[in-house]
Image (cartoon, rainbow, N blue to C red; front, side, top):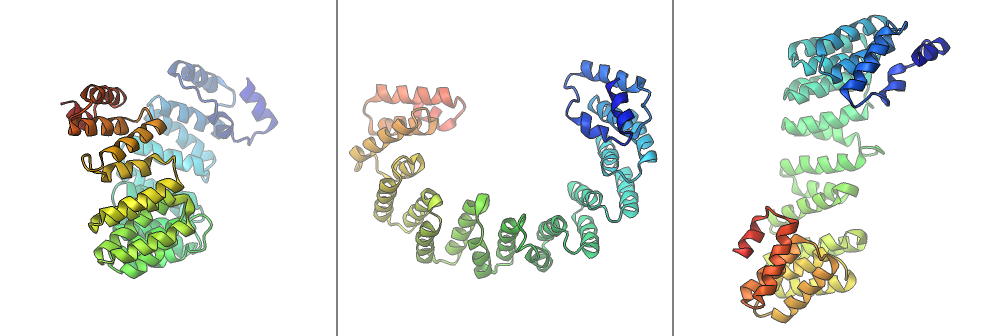
Length: 359
């Protein structure tokens, strides 16, 4: 067979890597491959045994798979993928005691294997034994002080355990990490916020960028509100528009929201007008204005704004429903209103707000 050929060329070939990509989806095809592997004269090669175990596990034959991975481990006791496969099979069997025992043994015998030791810590987190997980992570950090993933998970686990000083100690280590820097700043901010160290929290949130940008700025606004510093929040958001023009839409909306909370609806509308001039095709900004306009006193402007919205996104159930609801509220063009609401319902059949409009 092809397998035998591969192994003749290179008896140490990592077959589970070679074959991981071709493991069949269909049970029937898996059966054919399994039979071929079991019949192969290389069936006692640890890679083949691991592959047989992986295919058996896919079919839910966990005990059988466990037997085969044991055989493989006898020949390659330090293989990370074999060690973790055995742990996963024990997890599939739901045997927590056996998993703990296996991880303890594997970690002891492979002290320098970060993957195995991190997997052990993650397992304790998974079964909600955070303190034990943290103990394992601290042992890793003691042995490998620069292990970034261990520091990061230890930081988050410490926050969960309300051990805020510890969390800070671990996360601060990641301030210059190319992989974790952004998340480290974010969780340092969360940590400070939980301790009610609001100025520190804001300072860290300011440093957060990327996919956590918006959530960090929302959290900052919450802190400004708590401190009753809404004018400072407005100034901060204006400055952010200069620093982060790519987030202008979100920042304008956040400012308008604060102005509305301060009872200054007129200023909020003026700001949104300016925003829409700068970003004319941004439906979220236009919708923010729709929500601020009064269906009676701002009737014409509201009509124009809703039409503009439907030009940009004609199939949005939210915007169709907003138009239908507005017309119904104004008690005019009811036929048209029903048409919009029914169209909205086609796109979002279960949405309660649309059913309310139709009702």
